[in-house]
Amino acid sequence: MFTLHFGTDGIRGVYGEEVTDETAFRLGMALGAEGQVLLARDNRISSPRLAAAFLGGVASVGGECTYLGLSTTPALYYASTRAPAPNAVMITASHNPPSHNGLKVFGREGKLDEAARARLTERMESAPFRGVSYGSRDEDATLLDEYRAFFTRAVGDLTGVRAVVDYAGGAGYAFRDLLPSLGAEIIPLSLHETGERVNVGCGALHPERLREETLRQRADIGFALDGDGDRIIAVSRDGDILDGDALLYLLARMRLEKGALPKRKIALTVMTNSGVLRSLSEAGVDVVLCGVGDAAVTAAMREEGLTLGGEQSGHIVLGDLMMTGDGLLVGAMLMKSIKNGISVVRPPELIVYPQAMRNVPVRDTSVAQSERVRAFVRRIEESLGGEGRVLVRASGTEDVVRVMVECPSAEAAERAAEEIEREIRRESGNANA
Image 1 (tube, rainbow, N blue to C red):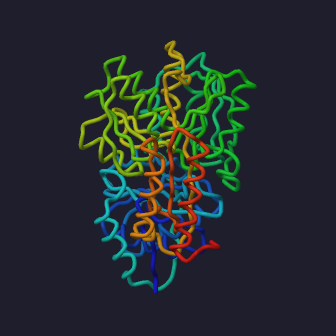
Image 2: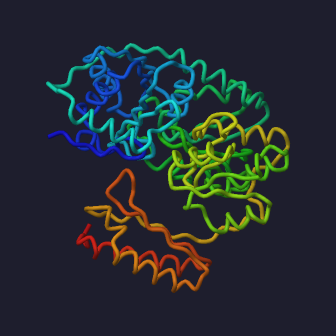
């Protein structure tokens, strides 16, 4: 019996286990029956094979697919807005290790909502399946040229700006020429055609080498992408690591000063640091809070009519340009600010409270909502004396419960997170996970 877990970010897991050629073939069958499809991939070793399986699934139902080849996720998203295809699929595991892979699906409004995911899951599981066949892998990258033209128009001249860019060993390789073509001096890190070491000790999850090289090169800025290019973490010329929260604060201030922040408001997730929320309020910026994930951010932005939003992990959406996170585009716009005389450094008035994070492996993520765990979390939050907060949520892509504790004391935050992790493990019956 074929089963799958279709989360908020598509289907993702270890290649050959949770994500197989059959998974890709069945998805191709399901989407091919709806009309034309766009397909692109990152540079993981398993990605070309998954692409061929997907193309085979589309062909098996008489559908049509335009295969763009190697691309970042945001470039595929932009291409989907320029084409008549109702659906687009990106083969990637984003920030995950090289052994993983996945399939992200976009509709015309971005990532699929819960109802659309449920319908697609049903079609995939019930499709008449006789075995995987593999389709032609001829590439047509014409739509990616349109993304390049859009990027060039949006950013403009970057002559004189010097940046270290960590491509995470991933799909950013497809657009390695974009920033130099605008006149920027780029010192590349982890720039590889094939993704054997995608995200391994590099990229947005591991900015330490980026920091070291930015300081050594005396660059104006450094920034890191993740494996599929939709996240960004930056390093200032002084060596400060700027996560999504800090970058959103800086971008909001820049736009507010130029009168380019509609409603003086931005969209952020519930994971946003409380100190950052306080700093934004003191700067005169209002915030609408939404659930975790870039899909929740873009939904809130559309509903509120906003042009800036994002999350701590580095998904940052410049909605007046494109309604999805694009690490390379955000990095380029930061470089443009530098060219225009605006320093990208951590401002002294930005408040950031210490946070302690845990990813707790569980057999069933519903344990996050059990009454015992919820009562325990309430007691922990009360013990912080009104100066902290606790968030416990089930992951939408992995069998883990994510724990975040935030308070003025780093020691108290770590101690509380550890206690909550122990309670979740006890409740799940998975103490040795």
